[in-house]
Length: 526
Image (cartoon, rainbow, N blue to C red):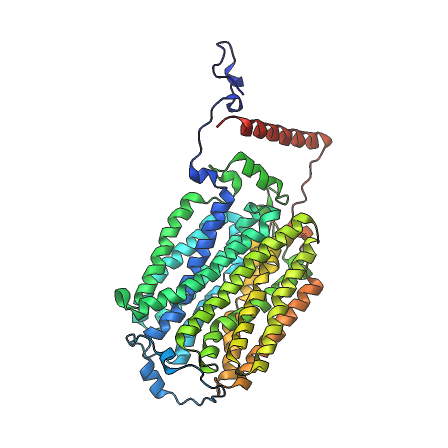
């Protein structure tokens, strides 16, 4: 129980805190595990990042003068499906026409400019986060893009060239963020919590997408603070406020964190792969990375999944409106349901894969293959069936929602696989894969546009879009199933071992002393 009063002759060096009767009470923020604070802020940060990425797609409708553009177009559309919705369903509150006379092709160039910058920096960001730490790279990247988002309305006034340049810079700045997240969590996420924590962070991206569409639409429809410019001001300011919390509450490693509990610090350190203290000074084994089947398997799987996701993200509203004739209100609701299904599946798959791993029901590699196969083959089956449903509106919508629900299984598949195969180089490996997968941001809409150029309302042309995605989905699943792995690659983990039996004894003794001290510390009255 400890001493209430020390004897006068008791040596000062023995008056340790563990023998004190009372302890300083911890604040609320200190009682919350530090790794959960990091996860929450990363979740919010990636959500903010996506609001800044997606909001231009929504505001573009109000920025351009649609009447002027439609008057210059001569488009022929084959209308196969009947409009089952009443005229009242298609009534929306009018908003002011924009003043920019950007043609559809010009709009496409502006929207696609983000990805030209985005694909250039993931690899650089991943490596820098391993060398200098991910805190300032990830946080600084979001803060910088928040500032650029704030000036987007002014760039639009300057012209197309200024908008394209700004979006390229925003894309390049955001390219470092996801890779930085993997580098950060390779130091913070215990093995048995890895899938769950990374899935929660990734979910933030999709929550950001869901939030952006209705909020931006509301600001435009009701002309809040000038209409469409207010969307950029709002999400830019939120990013700046988030950065303040990130600076004061997040640290690169658990050992650097001043408020982390000893119990949590020991738990994290005991449940991480062994890491070399000199890992930052060692050269990157590019030759072994390029020859690694596991690296290319997870890269191909990520490319396949991102292709299908991007195609649906960019073309789903057009399919619902042009082919099935859903009114704008129902169109937005269906989009929200699609992303909600993916979010729910991603969280459940992350938790489920961690639980299966904890129970040792399957090997880690088989867990990743199981969830990745579901994530890629599930959408394949759903998208194959969509053309067969024809103009049956609600069965088609159900299949679309199911396809994204299946894709959410990546929470137990490729999302944690990067940290599995390369604990010390997770940022670099993810940066490589994400840079390649990022090309789908402009390739997927480009291919779909080629198919739909002459007839964007015809079922036959849309079936080509769906079947292309199916083939890429299935190819990615097959490659990962054959060559995928979740075991640490020999070149990506530390090989340091204690050099003598004395070193083994010393480390065991230190660990034992710490565990005993923590047990005594926890048993003292609060």
